[in-house]
Image (cartoon, one colour):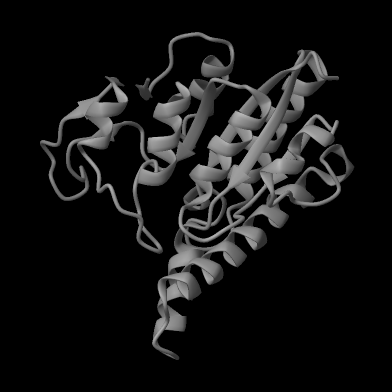
Amino acid sequence: MQNKEPIIISLGGSMVVPDLPNPSFINKFRDLILGWIENNNKRFFIIVGGGKTCRRYQDALSHTIEATTEDLDWIGIYSTHLNAQLLRLSFSKKAYHDIVTDPAVISSISDNVIVGAGWEPGCSTDMDAVLTAEKLNAKKIINISNIDYIYDTDPKIHPNAKKFENLTWDEYRSLITFEWKAGLNSPFDPIASKRAQELGIEVYFISGNDLESLENCINNLPFVGTTIK
């Protein structure tokens, strides 16, 4: 089991629950993963984010108390647990029996599919993916969200936004804030980005609406998306 290649995926909550839960995506994603573990020498560690669910709960909490950043982080973390449980249960008994919230225990689990979620305040689940990679001595993370590339500005607002197929960590980090803020909507959060750069981890950004590119990325074939290294 330990000889299997670990595939670490930071899965955006925007794909699991874009507004309402998204069973169409979950079914396709699950079937792709199950096809891989049945036919290939790989294991999957899937860390699920909070997405819109997270931000809705944070907004609601802010309207009930003068919420601290830690308060907002915690309600966001719990929203990732709900999203992760939805994905985990879709695998039935073919995934580890519970979600993992502490990357330190990852190496003690031998299942082929492990679903994780948020752990501690001060970062997003991107950081949990980086900590998982660090624990497993892995040098690659696949980030799946509702965007096809990283852009210099928001393409939904700016039609002429420039897309990037390849970036260095320095280039990417110059495009985003250096500070963490609860509910921050960034392709890869600044805390996780700093740690990934320190560890020499490559991150591949792929749209969850293009699972063919995900399969190509796993196969080390050309894919539609952005590579940061």
